[in-house]
Structures are given as C-alpha cells and as structure tokens.
Length: 331
Ligand code: NAD
Ligand code: UDP
Image 1 (cartoon, helix red, strand yellow):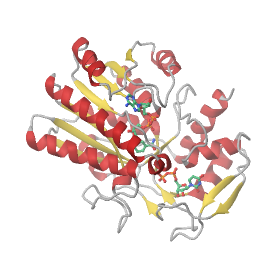
Image 2 (cartoon, helix red, strand yellow):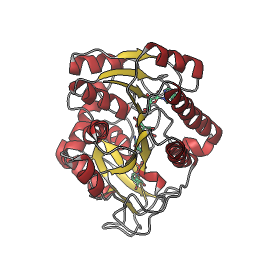
Image 3 (cartoon, rainbow, N blue to C red):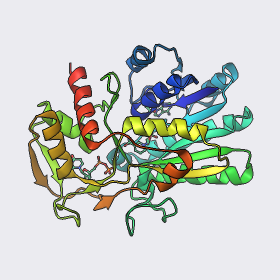
Image 4 (spheres, rainbow, N blue to C red):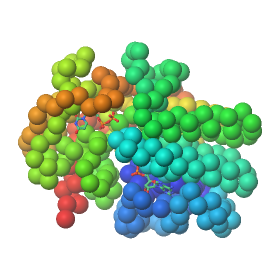
C-alpha cells in the first residue's frame, strides 16, 4: 500500500514515516521544507534501511501536486503539512489561512480526482478551546482562540462536509495533545528554528545552556501547583497512532483524541527533566501567556477501544529522549 505523507519531513511526520516503513508500507513524502530539513530523509534511511520517494513540492501549488498524483499510484494520504506556531498565526493570520487551507483543499480535490478516498488528518486539542470539564472527550464543544486553531477547526469542517457529499471517503481526524520526545536513535526529533514557543524545546535549550532561563508562564492556575497542566505524549506513541488509524477496520468519518489521558504541570515536567537527565533547568515565574488555559488532558478511551491505541512511553522517557536528541544534534 502506497501512502502519500504530506509534511513527512517534519517532527511528527518523520516519526510516522519510520513506523510506516517498518510496517512495509511504501511512502511518498511531499514537503516544501519550510519547517524541516532534507537531511531528515537520510536519517529515516539510517533508521529503517529503506527508501522513500521524496517530492519537494508546496501543496499550495496544485499543478506540481497533481504531477505527484499522476506519477504515483497513491492508496491513502496522511496529511501533516501545515504551519503550526500559534503566536506567528496571530501576527500573520493570512499566511496561516492561505497555507493551511489552500494546501488542504488542493490535496482533497486531487484525492477526489484520482479516486484516493482514505485520509488521516492532523488536528489538535486546540479545537476544544477552554473545556468546561476534564478529561476532554471527542464530543465536547469546539471553539478556537487563535488563527492556527481556527485553520484546524475549518479543515475539520471541510472534511465533514466532504464526507457528507461523498461517503465513500474514509476520513480519520486525529486530535493530538502535546507531543514531545524524540526517536531513541537521536536521529529524529523536534528542531524548531529561532526561539521555540513550546515548553519542551525551551526546557532543553535551557538545560544545554543555549538560553539562560525558562519563563514559567503563570503559577496561579487552578492546578496541582498553580502551573499549567497538559497531556504530554511521546512522539513515537503518537506516530504509531497513524499506523493504527490506517489499519482501522471502521470506515467513514472518525475522530480520535491521541493523548495519554494524564496531566502533568509545567513544574512537574521541569523537575522530572532535571532528575531523569541529572541537569539543572533554571526557571523563573513569569506572567501568564495570553490564551493559555489552566489544564488540558484527553480521554483516550475511544482511541484505545477502536484503534487499539496503547501509549507505552512514560514522562521519564519523553524527558530523556528530548534531551538526547538535542545533545546529539547540537553543533
Ligand atoms: P512540523 O512543522 O515539524 O511539520 C510540518 C511539515 O509540513 C514541515 O516539514 C513543513 O516543511 C511542511 N509544510 C508546511 N506547509 C507546507 C506546504 N504548504 N506544502 C508542503 N509542505 C508543507 O510540524 P509537526 O509538529 O510535525 O506537526 C505536524 C502536524 O500536526 C501539523 O499539521 C500540526 O499543526 C499538527 N499538530 C502538531 C502539534 C505539535 O505540538 N507538534 C500538535 C497538534 C497538531
Ligand atoms: N509554557 C511555559 N513556558 C514556556 C512555554 C510554555 O511555562 O516557555 C507553559 C504553557 O503556559 C503551558 C505549557 O507550558 O501551560 C505547555 O505549553 P506549550 O506551548 O508547550 O503547549 P500548548 O500551549 O500548545 O498546550
């Protein structure tokens, strides 16, 4: 079975490609490398000893994308490609709407034209806005607080409408919680350019001395120690969720949370990181960050029951693997 992986050179996409190759799927990556590097392809080869077909194509360029569909006989698509920085999306909303929506519409239209009806889409827990209760179930009300999140919700709606119009589509929407960690080889991981927005990449950079201090955004949330609580999931557990989604016997339009179901506070994560890696992470309490919520963690019952999703990595694994990746890739 040949899978087109859009955004397959990125953080979650590259780990998923490794899993797909291990399961003997053929992989065609389409990525414009706007937030990733070509060397990822060499590292995927080192890990799996298998080849992927790569097209450096922007999904917004429909003619170029069509050439990929003409050349390759695609059976299913996993759609990771998109811009994902919340803060940047507030500053440059048009760029986010254009990139994330046009790329998806082009992709879906070509899938329709070439009769490729199976797609797995990367959505996010951000579509739940500020939930009224926890854990978060898939049928909770949806709302967003920034343009990035709105693109995810709009794409979910586009997929739902597409399915209504043609129920031979087989669509899986995966709502990710907070992926961290890296491949245990140290060859794949998250390598954001510039100053990272997310907590774990920031913690790692403080631990390696690249940044002097971590700002903890708020210690007066209604949580165990006042700092924000999130559901961190190892990227390798998350990536395997995509293989399970492809193998799912259930067809139609399906939505699953991919999280561990456990909440961890910022301070708990910092302390775990220090003890697992034997390093100090300097931090200070800073004002709350706009748009942040107290706590967010998944119910993953539906994914466990219907997909056989079983996260196996611990917070300790996530802290160790994140640090290992950055140590191996510094300089
Ligand atoms: P990433 O930035 O590492 O990977 C995205 C990839 O898509 C990059 O390689 C980038 O070059 C490519 N890309 C972007 N726009 C493109 C375009 N127009 N044409 C071709 N390629 C394009 O991000 P990631 O963390 O791997 O996230 C993958 C997906 O999961 C994204 O859609 C993201 O919004 C979603 N997601 C991520 C998180 C997270 O915390 N990492 C959480 C929830 C959802
Ligand atoms: N956070 C923090 N300092 C940082 C980055 C994040 O205290 O430099 C906190 C943030 O307020 C939230 C948690 O860490 O409570 C996770 O934030 P992240 O941006 O990683 O994920 P998201 O906001 O998407 O859940």
